[in-house]
Structure formats: structure tokens, C-alpha cells
Image 1 (spheres, rainbow, N blue to C red):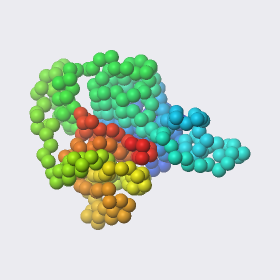
Image 2: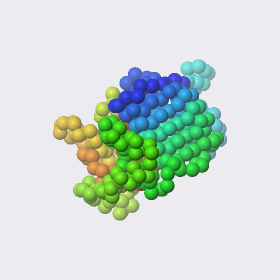
Image 3: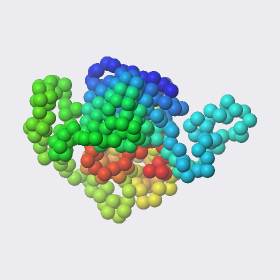
Image 4: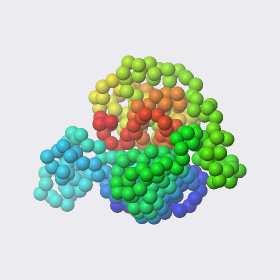
Length: 337
């Protein structure tokens, strides 16, 4: 278990570490966490991905890596996954560890959106996503996804109401005020506080939800018309221990049928040589992996978004809001997605 807090309300992405070079918590602009425990922290896998302007109170518990294969004869773990690995050093009578094929994902990541308020002493099970603008009441246990702008309470957490009507929620999701500059937010703060509906009507334009087609988007739609499932991931080149190679290798060996993995390069600052080296690497692995410069048009066609510890995964999730897609964490077996 590792305890985290970050009470500095400031711009920029923040990363909190339990292990060197691989963050356990990633927070977006202005987000803070008063106090939180990440439990079952075995290895570098567990991760909490938090969007912008999120407020997370005292005493939170994030339960990671505790998925169980209930179809197995035994619930006890005696293989090389999770805590099972520890048994081999602490109980020398056991045989060497074995990595068995499994139907189970460890569910090592919690995803929290933008403008989320989480009350004190909330427990969140990994493998679940809390949408933009949601409110989680104190002492709740989040054991399923919470929709955007929902208010959820209890054990297990259940949605009791929504903060606004569906039309206002749709407009706020399109406006994405959390991407504004602080100066623009302060200029409009009084309206944001006094009348969210009027704010949404003033700043919403249909163009915010439009996306012109492009070449890679057209290619993806052609693939989908033939029944191909689209896996998408954002290259996490900015990380000290990037996961994109692991994702590519796992996908290439997963034997997933009728599926294509598309990596998007979102940063835009890498050299032509570096980009080509990535293309060469994935082409050696599989013909079903594509690398492209970022295409919002193609991203919006995603069926499964494979997330990493980089904040770019939070940005991609935000762009996909309102779409029918699934998130899958890089440290979970992609063959189960």
C-alpha cells in the first residue's frame, strides 16, 4: 500500500511515484488529492489517472490488481500474478512460480475525469471510470463506471440524480471549459457559478462537436465496414518508462481476430527519424498495427482505447466522451479486451 497526497493547486501535469520512473498517480491541471491509499501496490502496474480540475478529499482508497477469476476452481492465487509472486519468497516449500493462461484481468487502473468531486473516505475499485463532472458522495464504494455529471452515493455507489439536464450536460462536454486558460475561466467565473445552463448556451456551438474527415479516418471507417475492431492507443513517448512497446508486443501475440491497433502520435514534437523508427518496430511485429500522426477523426472511431500512465490517455478519453468505446489498461492482458 502507498499513501499519496498533493495539495498544491497549480497548472500542469503532476506525477506521484511509489516506484522510480513509473508514476502511480497522474493528475491534470489544477487537480489535487488530499489523501489517498493505493492498495495492493505490487509492482509498477497499478495507476490512478486523474483529469483536470478534480477535487479528491481525504481518506480515499483505490483497490488495484484485485480481479478474481471466479470461474476457476480456487479463488486463492498460487501463480506468478499479483501477491502470488510474494509467496515464493516467503514460503520456500512452494514450487517455482508459473504464469498460467487466465481469463482474468488485474484491472490495475482507475480513471477519473475532469471537474470531478470525490467526497471523503470513498473506495474505488480499479477497472472503473468516473466521468467528467461527476460527484461521488462520502463513504461510497465505486464498483462500476459512473456516467458524466452523475451524483453517486452508497455501497455500492448508485446514481441518484444528475447535476444538470441531458442537453446542458452534452453542451458542457463539448465546451470542455477545463481546457480553457485560467484567465478565460476567471473572466466567466460568475456566470459559471450562477447559471450553468446559461453558460452552456452562451459558449456552445455545433462546430464544437464536428470533426472534418481525413485520410486516416476514412481508412478506419473502411476497416470497420468489414467488421474490423479498432484498438487505439496514444504513444506515451514522454514517459521515462513508456508502455507503447509493451502494448504493441502484447497485441501482436494476442491472436485477436479481426482487430487492428492504431498508435497516434499526439505530441507532434518527435523527429521524422524517431517516428520512422516506431513505424519500423511495429511493422516487424504485425501487419495489423498502424502508426499515424494524431487524427481526431480516426480516434473517434475507436472501439477499445488502450490507456497508459501518460496524461495523453486522459485527453483521448475526454475527446471520446459521448462515443461507445471501452478502455483497456496497458498492464492488463489485451487478449481479454
